[in-house]
Image (cartoon, rainbow, N blue to C red):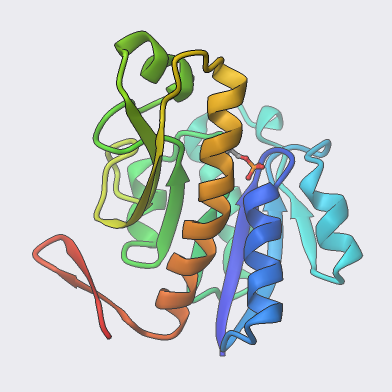
Length: 201
Ligand code: GRF
């Protein structure tokens, strides 16, 4: 049984997709905890309703990034996770924190990396005029929105797309590729070779 800790900041729809897939597909995994940096993260209610332990480490109560990350790390490690998942966790993490979870922390980013790192990725895609946009699941490395790619999904950008309509189409794909990626991890099918991900058959 692999233990998973999920980190969220908001509505937690990716977290929900992962929890539901884990249950429906009977993954060899246990959702050990959902941890938020905000007390008002909507996803916490869902986790409670599923009987998943929750915790909040309030980021705005800390004066430095280092102090917050140290407190968050201590809280996460109480649950002894094999895998830490960033699921709409809106924080830039220190290199020490990231290194502590090297090879066992994944993130979902709403663009086809390496295009459009950072925030407002859907607007960035519209501004650039790309015809294909999407989402990426990747291992977390100290450089923001970089790291070995586990899975990507593409959607077409339509001529009359708004930021919202594009985001909704991408989100539907996120809810497919993130659970899929996590399942590969907990089933031991992910290998990192030369900083690239190989999925075993
Ligand atoms: C998703 O689009 C994810 O890719 C990004 O933040 C959003 C979080 O949505 N990192 P949710 O909280 O999972 O619903």
